[in-house]
Amino acid sequence: MPAATLDLERVTPNVFTTTKLRGCNPSFVVTSDGVVVIDTPQLPTRAVAMRQEAETHGPIRYLINTENHVDHIFGNHWFRGAGEVVNHRALWEIFMDPGAALDPFAYAVEAIPTDDPDGAALLPDRDDYYADLPRGTVVFTGDLTLRVGDHTFHCLWTPGHTPGQLAVHVPEEGVVFTGDTIFSGCQTWLMTSNVDQWLEALERIRALEDVDHLVPGHGPVVTLDYVQTQRAVLLAWKAAVADAVAKGWTREETIARVRFDDAFGPVDVGQAYMMDHIQNNNAGSLWDKLTATGYAKGR
Ligand SMILES: [Zn+2]
Image 1 (cartoon, protein in one colour):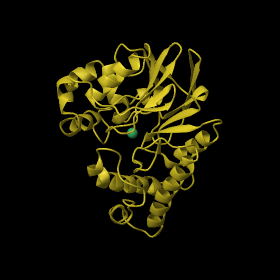
Image 2 (spheres, protein in one colour):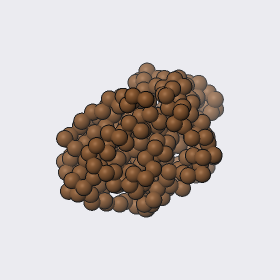
Image 3 (spheres, helix red, strand yellow):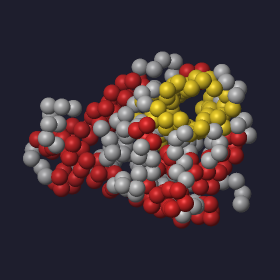
Image 4 (cartoon, rainbow, N blue to C red):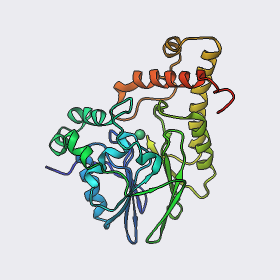
């Protein structure tokens, strides 16, 4: 099988990412003492290709996942044996959670026929995947700093989009990998989120110094000032649904009327068919939270 296309982008001399695949923006950083991978490609042939590409620069020392959503972790399966897997405990506990509203294994497999037909031959069956779950071997709470060669990896706990969300700041490269705390130029998925925590996470990222490049979870690489755009998206969603609740709209009325299909760009690569899923579940999940007893007094 020929090597699958990754469309790798060299962000700095030592930082590589790809923003063109279905799935997240998997990335790696080359140090003087091996490679650190941040999130893995969801599509099997791309995961195999990225591991091969990363290993041409040295052994993989760590694989850091920024969140538990399947597009960031499913590909870990093809990185087994390549360094320690670093997970926040709140991610580790729900790694490939079969109880999730959107079944993670089924959603990963759904992409194979259309986006990675050659990947079908590489795919383990569900029982085999779950029997050897490729989750964290280094599991922590709060923040964690790793030193690899001459590079520092500040794994910053930035919950909001998901409970175990991480941003990885590499000051020597002037780069921060935010995971899905930032969706640049594409639709934001809110349904497993705590928007108020997410707004705090954005402020933590905004306060980082000497960041030249922000590698988002989805969409093109941007600069740190994109934090302001993401903040505006979250505030617009929250305000629109709060307004619906104030008008006494039911959950169904809110889902029917509150939509941002056009305002916040397309859905990221390969998932255009999920537009209704995103709009309906963003509005519905926010309605649930804003109408929950005690919300106004608490968070
Ligand atoms: Zn994602």
